[in-house]
Length: 103
Image 1 (tube, helix red, strand yellow):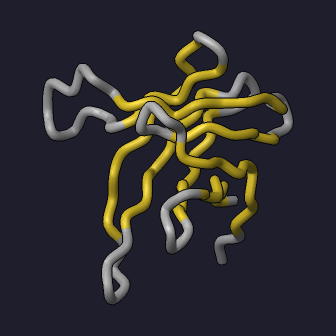
Image 2: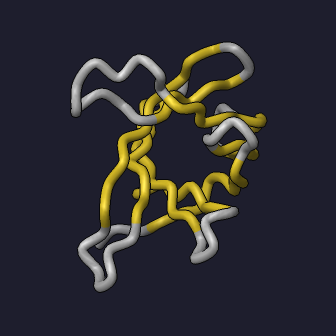
């Protein structure tokens, strides 16, 4: 059984990514998910996770298997205690999103 825990709430940024707060055991700060302008392949991350000017992770676009399919992002964060795997789920309007950790 997998449990899900919301570790962040984000909103659309003017630059085309997301920004908001993240709360883990070792990170309680504002983060930004900025578009990756250096995508050299299909497998390259769509977004870079930034803590200030420090790159702390990446995010890849995905489509859900629900009908109709919804877009979400698979997020990897290099937390100092342990790497985190999470998902960013935008709301129906696409203006806010929840960052959910799978435990």
